[in-house]
Length: 437
Image: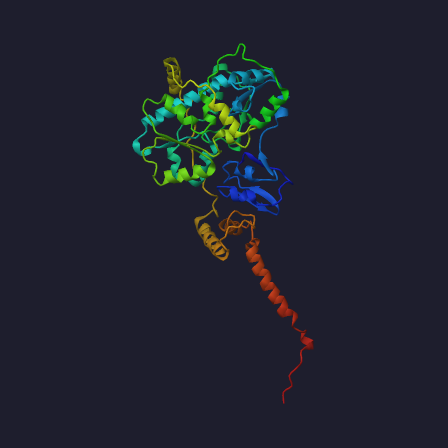
């Protein structure tokens, strides 16, 4: 299994800052090198934020190599349009991209985001009171977090495909093109929309580059564009880059007054999911979670400050009123089912300790015994995020109890006492014999 995060070999200094930030204990630092447990990684990007040595990075494709193959078609995340002070509308961004022979799919993207909001509003309206609130799946890291830590909430996830995928499908359907599409992503989580999508067998997008990489390329080229002759581009989809933007979009298509809740940041997301797990969100119809601060504009793969991006998007004129013609078009698209997930989202349990139940139970008892000997302070000095994680690694044969510095000191102390005792002993031949009378 892949992750959207790559390890920069030789850069890790073994500081273990990253392992303490991971919400699923998916990191280890052994022999001075960081290691990612892909079965547990949710690609939230917290480790990238805490690594001062830049030993971790986005696992994006080579942009220069992609560009060398000629005209390129881009499926850009909404955050991309908030990276520039000079190109402050999608129309201006489109014009700047075109000057570099880069084709955008903004029109298809705007339609896909409208369709996603329309379909989600329908699901909320048709859901039973007991099955509410429903949870957004737009943030892939949130989906993976639920798969790993909150599997009992999986049935609450909406069945709406990410509009980034749907937009590509709409474009292929309208043009019949099988040309490769490059996803422009603000985070490591959306890298996995291409590399290992959840809810579908394979992505319709072929490669992925970061918003930061493309934005810097565009800024370096510095194309001069103006507003003359700009074609109108829908702007509702841009709101999804902000916390609460998806909820606002869904309300625009809902036939009833729905109650939504939106949070951003990993800690807040976990707290909200825990509240939902405990049944504390009665009366809420829809929950929108983003693991990045302020929403997708806080993604680690962006070029611009999230605060400036928020300011630009908040000033973006958005027409929330939906025309009858728009609603009719979306209703027809809704009936095609193009917005649906291909597969149900399954839980991602921790890897089993053994292949058979009996062997797993034996290893579990051993793990509990090892854990009982550890200090239970979760200091991270062993390169594991917790004492329980070290105990698990020990029974898996991937560590030793003396990896714990406290157990190592105990062992050294015992060995020191043994050496001291041995040093006072004489060879057998030098022993003074006791004479008997």
